[in-house]
Amino acid sequence: METERILYPCYFNAALRRREGRRVPANLAVEKPDIAALKAALSRLGLSFRTEEAHHPSRWMLREGRVLVSWDGRKEELIRTVARAMGGRV
Image 1 (cartoon, rainbow, N blue to C red):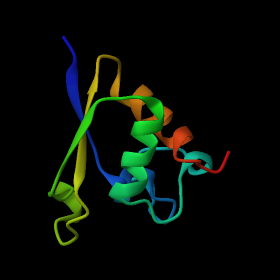
Image 2: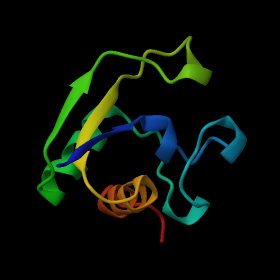
Image 3: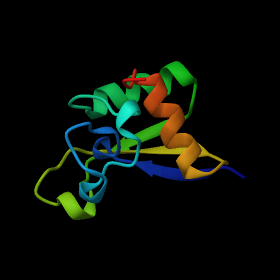
Image 4: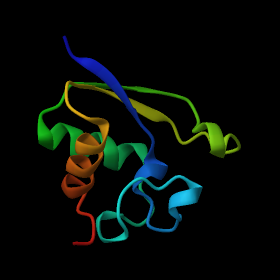
């Protein structure tokens, strides 16, 4: 049974530090990620997902939205796979 994993755009934001919510290494981070870029990357990967209007708990003042992705593996694997599909600086 597939589990839904939650992804926020801030996970991929090159302007943020790790302690501010970035979850990928700096070489995989992208400039100004948004829900549209996240959705495009997930579509290219052929993953099933849905979006929600929400905010990251530590960034409550910004309602950037979030994406729920059907994924059986580890969340870190998903995050890195999506970062590469978003064209992170390699």
